[in-house]
Length: 339
Image 1: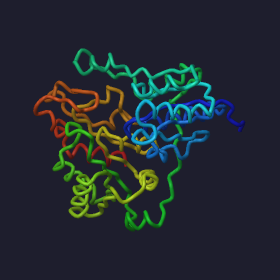
Image 2: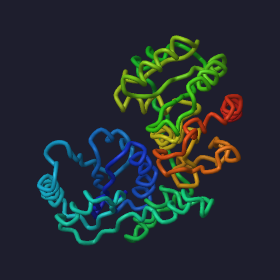
Image 3: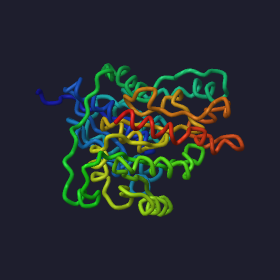
């Protein structure tokens, strides 16, 4: 394979799910354009996401420390300018990246079109149709720079062999593993806990259930679920991100809300079932390369204003339980049909 000859800078900061969604796009980009050497500017924490991608280096941004404020962005630009970038792909397009680009020597760049106008129409109820996916919006940035990316025939990393530490944590079992990530940033995106318990109770009879989450409150809830059901293990707060990705790569299915864990599973090629409350896949945030019927949707006859927002942070009164209109039996049936 020829050595990469052109340095390009890709910028995507922000939330875990947004960064995870870049992974299949950047994998396709580097495979389809081996002449590119990609530097990805993102948070250091997300570095393991990109561990299997050839010709890609992560450059860590520290916005709480040395890269804080306008002077911090100037210092960041000085560090980046040493690489002599040929083009810049801004997959974030916020004030911070706009200021940063003013300090970068490379003047050839394209920023993502987030489709805000169409998304507003979708939220307002003026239209109800699938908008362009976020993955395709990322790909369009590279298309505009002259590096077309075809996402139609993706490849994924191999399943990772679990270390003895992970085998010990998960316990000896020949049962297939099903991941459950029951939390999301906003209540309106979450499946009610009582219904989640019913799903775990049923599935744990046949499968090893692996619980995902983070933060003290979530871990406390997951510990209770681990204690309450057989064949159920909580890995939240016990592993590095690298180790967590190793576990995800061994799942048969991941059950997640419209949240970062869905995108992490999908970027590894794992079958991903998602539960949608006040948000909707039509806004373009469905996990990568998953069939439409893997998305389980709240009842729009009952909750007609869905999607109430793009990110699930705004919704009318009594809509916080919208996801509860999906029966647990339907969730179990979908997962069993996939396995």
